Image 1 (cartoon, rainbow, N blue to C red):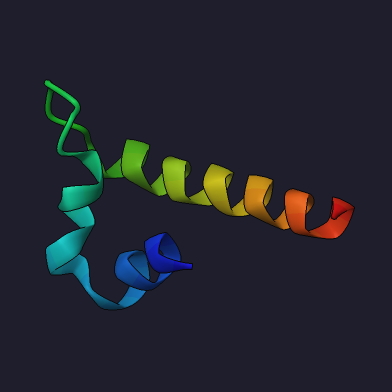
Image 2: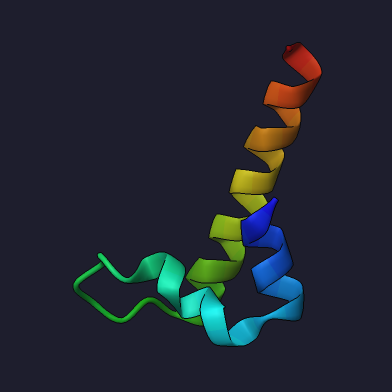
Length: 48
């Protein structure tokens, strides 16, 4: 899962995930985004 890899090991590419957002996204918002996407991905993996 590329988002988790980039978040933990390749911080230089992490901001590229948010390039379409017109405002500055804070690090706290980015952290919660990674947590929520990981939870959703995990739930989908369990259900299918």
